[in-house]
Amino acid sequence: MMNFLVVKWKRFARWMDFNPPYALTASEWRSFEYEFQQEAPIRFFFKHRLPKLYRPVLWKYKGIKDWIRYRTIDRYHVIETGLKPGYHEFDEKILYGSFTMLKDFVEIEVASHFHVQNRDEFPYSKKEKLPLYRRLFYRRPDLGIKHLEWEATLDDPSLPPTQQFPSQAIAAREILKLYRWWVDTRPKRDYSNNLKYDHQGFEMGSLDDDFDHTAEDFIAYHKRFDEIEENRIEWDKEDDEMLIRLVKIRQVIWT
Image 1 (cartoon, rainbow, N blue to C red):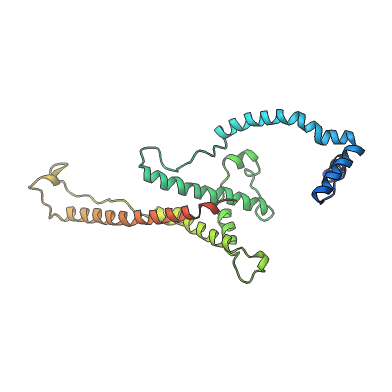
Image 2: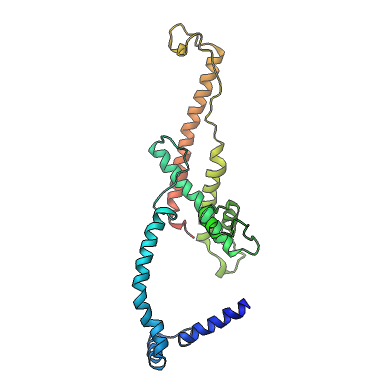
């Protein structure tokens, strides 16, 4: 029944549009519009004249709706860093803000794009069927990765030339590397120093001249401290390298 109504509606819509052809030259379209106006003036009015009367009202309404939407739900101008509440240095906010956007791109935008195209193979869950849920809470890292892994094969020589997109494949591989580094590799860094040493009577005892700096627990503590500092220097270099790589591909991060 529904399919029948859809077919009927499409036929009616084409009739209202004076059954336009699928392709014409510019001059032929002008001739078609003139014939449309002469042969079916009422339908021409509904198609071309009436919209000019109500569109300004719709644009006004849309402007108000967009003003609210861009300040509540779709706050595209706001960058989420993913950092916990508290003080954070400027360099840390740049790093986390950039890679949190990459993470959201893969897990939300790319995943949603893949999901829409492959709904038969990956049907929506009950929650994902709700438009409001998809708008506010949708996140599928598994599907985002699956789509990028497919894109990464688009320079395969075995593909027909018309199906090869080398630049797209290169970009997808780089996005995957950066994403996996941020999500899987970087969080494994260990900044902790759980070793303790005897303060030998005072909380700041190690500052005293008579403090035994040769104590085994004190030496072990500072050895671990020095290891963390050495790692921190290397990790900072790695952060810089990865951030630069992300900046270099920023123009291809879109769906």
